[in-house]
Image (cartoon, rainbow, N blue to C red):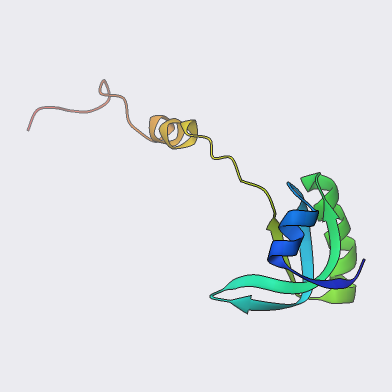
Length: 93
């Protein structure tokens, strides 16, 4: 591995995978190229490998090349769990 590639190349060559760049270059706070040191579709395995490589490489840019699916129910579930029941509220002023 250890090849310098662009973000676009990473998305094309490693679709729906987690990637780690070392010695990366950013534009507008986003890594646009770097040395690809690890890639893996499994998030847990990816992070385990990154943890082992961290002492060797130091700073890394970690990205997912696919679309991150947002769960539309999360905000609703948070709101429900953080809202008091109307039974508990005093409606008189």
